[in-house]
Length: 135
Image 1 (cartoon, rainbow, N blue to C red):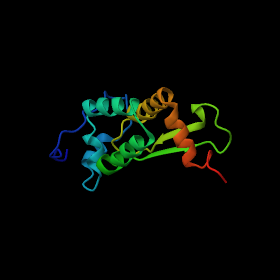
Image 2: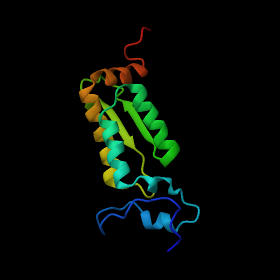
Image 3: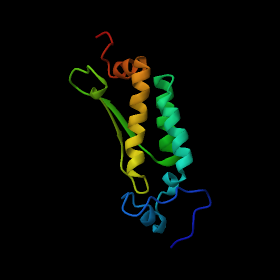
């Protein structure tokens, strides 16, 4: 086993519960270990923030910080067809070594919860794509 990074890292998932590749990442000398900084406690705080977004700019700021600090990339897109419900908004957390599959599912769920509570954020998101813009 390679040396432990000089910062607190996420504990491993129970055997067989996850296929995140945490151990392989730790053994890779050139691996990007930033994602392991997302401990379970930090993940809870992140999900709480995502569930309580105040605006689209809050979402974009968190999205940027996730990529800078943890290497986690999100893709948030709208259906090219008519969007009638939040199902027309796709939130994808890209796979990466060390990122737990439960976390990859929890982040979009938290964002959608926020969009349900604050529909104006969803409208702003749709407007980014020019849906409401004037020709």
